Picture 1 (cartoon, rainbow, N blue to C red):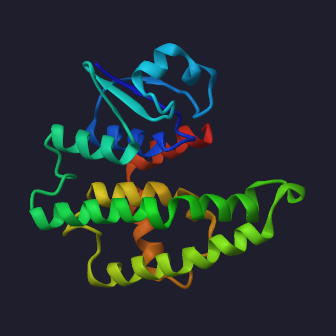
Picture 2: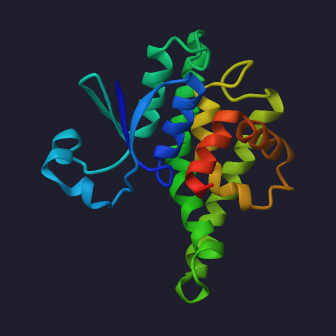
Length: 203
């Protein structure tokens, strides 16, 4: 059986979403990145980086949420894994792009503009993050002007990977980016996305 280590309140969110899309049965270890369980010798043997998410798929150990999602989609021959090599390349492109251009910036912006108590916020950090987010959102808007989805004619692992990272953008005013806003809504309205979001929000 597939075992999934990682809370929905971590990057495990996107893996839980993917598992839902694929209809997988799995044993879930709902651990946060700094949970005591991730500091044990047993977990170190699974992932020397001491990070979640990690999967154990009948003895095959894999970490890094993007890689996990590509693996699961391909292994289960899901249409979420593009069969066209060009669409596959686009899925890789957008997933890697998100990790580089948006992931940390969105965390910093939302935490220091909304989530943290005002006394703990660092406005300069939020402002610097926003300056990097705007051109990234512009790039997504431009891509979505050409196609309804990021890597081919249908929802794919690319959309899931990027939209899951944009979970925090659900509370951001996206009026300037109407195509991005509509695309994000389409992604998060999928039943497996709603289920993963409910897990994250404790509903």
